[in-house]
Image 1 (cartoon, rainbow, N blue to C red):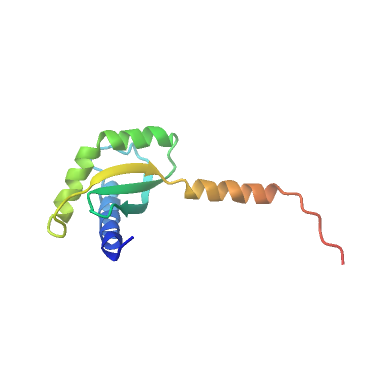
Image 2 (spheres, rainbow, N blue to C red):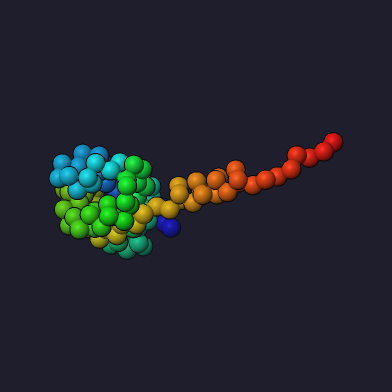
Length: 119
């Protein structure tokens, strides 16, 4: 990933975080969502947005709500970055699995029955 993609991704991450934080339209249904990561395509036309959803009861429902309002979210993003970017990328939202996988691995490790080493 080029430096340009990384900078653009960080800009989008920052602005989307602020948009979600100030969710005036009620899209998020009071779920606390953080933007875990944004990966931008080399031509900067597509941004893959990875969402971490703590306190969300059904993450797939929240993801579909966000996807349904993608146009509004993209417009709000465009209003914020229009002076810094030529094009507003198409947004594709994903659930960030990293946190859940880490928790699953931690639970597995805790459940292991490892005998104490004898001296």
